[in-house]
Image (cartoon, rainbow, N blue to C red; front, side, top):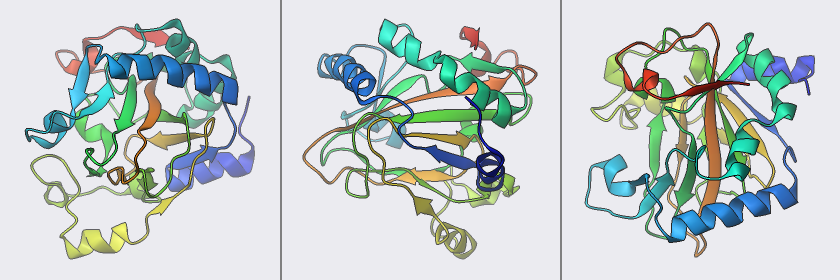
Length: 242
């Protein structure tokens, strides 16, 4: 599958792109069922809200290292239909990195916390920024349960370090940052929709105000020429050429 010229231009300008109905409802239901079993049994490795926010909150935030958990997850992360798209946006051969994302993300009812405005690249160590993530909605995602919000074209901005706090969150109290945050946009998602976004694109999500968990799947790929930096976490896990 390939993006048309308009879609590719939109990704390059905005730093993110929505593709509706990319995965089938049946496939999403099977992935969601398997993910729910791992969530209910807290199958390690996991990350809690407290680990993310440096608090005592033990609410599950995500299942980590999902590639090796279930064949369903592996097949989705190696889905042939998306390879051509990833080649286009990376302008290179896509390499699945298992060091980052490679996760089932959760927003648990009422107990989840907001996800601060951030760029994923600030947590990763590669030679350049040619990385994108693929977010799959496994059910409906909307304003009340923590749908992702993005700041268009933020991947093109070279921010000063002072724009971020000690947790690498984009400081919402800064008047300059506030003006940029006002430009944020979101898409309500249904099961099977995917969003591809650049590692420098600022994104955010509220907590889940509903009575039902929000469960999503996210993985990251790099361009083959963009190598992880030796001695960092980015270089300590296996990688897979797609």
